[in-house]
Length: 371
Length: 98
Image (cartoon, rainbow over all chains, first blue to last red; front, side):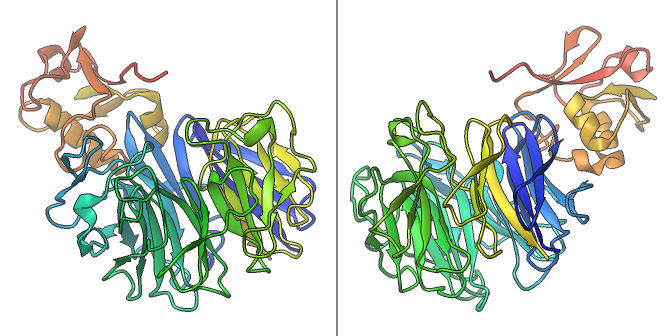
């Protein structure tokens, strides 16, 4: 029988929510790693029992945990993230050169072709890979070394590599995104990279059309259309149809186009979800209403999805990695808030229910579809 | 035999109840004690000291005998009472944050 497992990372531990394929009744386990920040958890698409978790703490640093039994038990694996060679410098907040320093792992992306391989996006921004299930990590240093690295600078949340999209049909093609450097693409498995930010316009940087420096918040892609990528930028919802070579805006009739999350329907590659946030100064939903907006036309025309979501006095945020979509039919959509609620929809977003509502602030949400 | 008390989050991580007892060869220094701890509990590598530099992490402190040893050289001898196992070497998560 089918089911789903929702992996929730919070500011004070991890939680795992499970349900059968109806997705009406939920079981909550946790907190796992109580008291620690869990930036991200994700399961292997090749071995769903294998789940990785990024466990971090301002006191005790970074750990990576791995489960091989679907989250019932965990073992710490490798936590040594050493930059390749002399790390060099990037641009600091005041414009001066600043040495690259490892701070934490923002995102873990298991390989789509090798169950022992997993990628990690870290702060200060770099991409690492483990080929032995997370025990040893090495940097794919072509990203930092391609030339624009010294011009990258941190966003308010730090200079983090937070998004990793692997083209399942061509695993040598990977998209990544960095705040606040922009989006990048490799076509050779991570050896060489190029910035893919043409068409982005960011008024908050000296040259609004610069090659790098854009605060890209998140990317999303449907595996059936790997040249089409959707982007929630600091401001603006964007799309590309040529693998990032050029982007155009599809914010359309959204009430505000600031936001963090963006995701794509499991079966309809032109159906996209965002959660607009009021502004870069006011990180909560617009007008006190928690609304997911869905476009069935690949952007520009958006409809608010409100059934089951609070429509007054709501001032939560939804962070960049805190939305996920299962692959059942109809697909389920899940997101977590800064207020500790995790909402789910078992009908593609038409209606919502709180799966759990009093967790610590949610940092990330992923979902595994179990057969 | 040296007694070490780790903070709760690291005891949970290493699945330790109560104090840890380690033996160090030669002079009992912070470095020798932490090397012994990390050797027995490899999952603690990087959590007390930075991986690359082996410097104490900023929000970790070392106390013993009612003294703050955090700023002493890692190669200084720890107090004799710690070296003799009469007093524990305390690894503390500093009061920080909100």
